Length: 230
Image 1: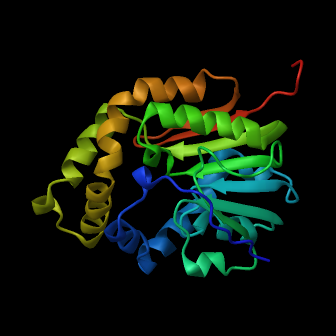
Image 2: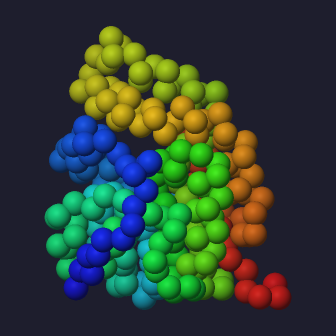
């Protein structure tokens, strides 16, 4: 049964109505879902036991949750600042509305956390540090946090410059992604210059790095919370 509840949210990081409408495009939702299994494979989730307690942080429209369900994962929870009525009503998942840097969820209650294409929405290294502390609190000892996002690399900065030039958007996909980047620039303009600090919080904190890889535009990172004494 869906457990939809309203928690305190951070208005500072709420996406605009225009962003929400663009991101909800049905064709793009199908594209994101189609690409999701390969991304989960790279993060190591395909080998995870299907009965783990799994929480998708910044769950959006639930594409990752939908794929997890199709892969026979049983205990699926999502949380985001904005939850659609469709996702809130989906009985396959437990859904919460709230801030991923300060949830009301209980300590050490999850085996695996995911954050897919969303960490940059936290907008600053300070918020990423809060996110990492909250992830540590939510995870059981031995639990994992998987993050997929883009780094503040030269190629990303060049790509985002390109996508912010409307005159260069000559295909439907370029127009779509360009509109997403324009709407997200309020987060990215501060996040990208702070990438060295963000990277330090991710790779050099209390978690153990279990998997780490990258492509031209994305990094894939799975971290493990050690058991006490390890």
